[in-house]
Length: 342
Image (cartoon, rainbow, N blue to C red; front, side, top):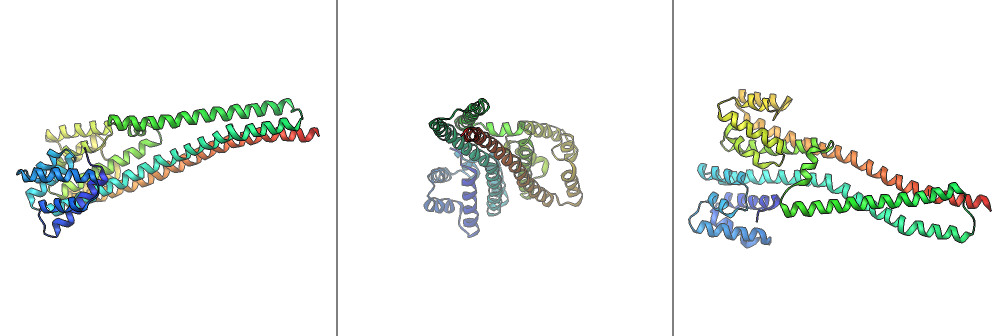
């Protein structure tokens, strides 16, 4: 069973602290296993200890465990070769923290509208099945005849509210169904829909750019050149189109083409980010430039989520206001009709 991003962050953070304190890898893993309450991580750590006891290196133990991604395994391999395992674990901790933060923001962008949608279902349901029947009963008990217009509008209000309730209920069932389906199948339908939607495509693009740029910055900072680092980043994202571009980039880079020329051709980076990468190559500060770009794309994610919520929230509130307004008018008109006839 694979660890979540947050679980990998916790593991790497603890390992970095322990290794910097002078303990060995074996001791560090056992110490974390004794202290941690998370049963999932505890099982993974027990398997790691067993693999290391059998003579495996740390990177081989991670690979055999299948709970860790290839990105982490490759960086750990670098740490073993260079002798900077504590630095690598600290970098991985920072990486997973950033990815977890981005994921949380993405969930915020999706969860808040869903909560509003559920609230709308509840409100409209109460109106349809509780409020309107009571008003209809009260109006009938008054013993006054409604005008034809008032009667038609009240009937329209009831039908409109019922249709809205059914539509909202279907949407909720679809959302719940998609959640459990993608969890069972291990696919990300939400991400795919966001990539194709008008509002979500910009957010999805910024999210993927932030992930691959920060990964590249860590690889370069750990001693890889960008051409070598590019071989691993396509596995970190779930955007099929961007993955295809990265695969094509790697093929062209393997044929000896220049890095900047290739990423420009496939529009991996454009505009200001591309110019900064060119400057980084000329000045020999490409690792710092990639870190700056990673922060830039992470800021873009935050801004895109803010824009997404600023668009979605008013739309949902306006729709709810429309439903409530129609219902109120459908109730008030018959009351006015009755009062006028008295």
